[in-house]
Image (cartoon, rainbow, N blue to C red; front, top):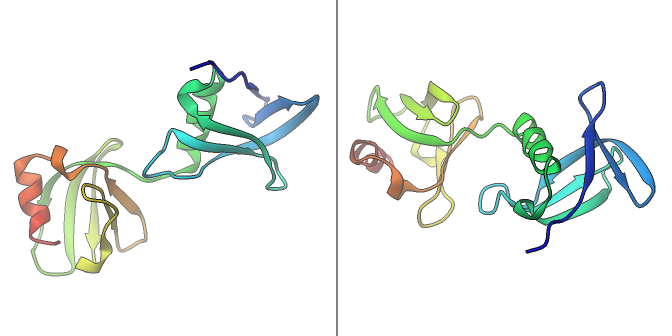
Length: 155
């Protein structure tokens, strides 16, 4: 796979600046087309008017340091912690408080009802807490036996 060269840097305000087709675009934002199923594929760099300036088929094909700048910007914009383990629940009736370990650290949230656990695929789940924050379980098969046992009580 050939590297896609994207002339991207940060300005003094921390905004992404894209130089493309002779134009300098300040404040571009990366937007994922498929943030859950294919987070590294299908990323658009959007200008401040919401127009697509550059389309990236696969982020791994973008040359450094643009690749890191795009990932950093996406992390700052998107907040969807990935659950790595379910360490406890206060009750198996609703509402219940869950204690989970995510890729961002340990946290607790309140699950209002079983309808707040949504299956995205055979292995992926999206859990929405009482404040509307979405937690992703990318692959239930990778959870510990204890986590799976707790999760099975709710889905």
